[in-house]
Image (cartoon, rainbow, N blue to C red):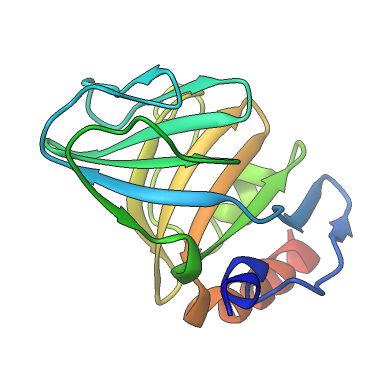
Length: 165
């Protein structure tokens, strides 16, 4: 059963490639929500700056609130505080390319210009009717965490927007 949970709602989805934007499902990741006591996870110090992420290799900690972080990576160990494994409930989508911002702004109300949403910034927001965690990992690359129950909806909406952008 754990393999099915880790597999993801869009495990068989092929990357969507349009001029200037590619949308792909990220490989399965371990995800934990950390609440309360700070400290480290994966050898990372949890970020204390609002709406920022810290990374180390393929590991990341995203600030979601004053005492809440989403920690993502291949494995989880040495985490202080209250830890909730949410690996089974979320799917990650990667939107990248020179038109990635335009594709995301097709259904996300945030100003995603690099001056307003720089590399390393992460927030909870909406994409269409779905709540997501949006993280800018590079100038033209975004990581979206979405509930698996909304994954097909978000994936299809990204595809539709990419066609028109």
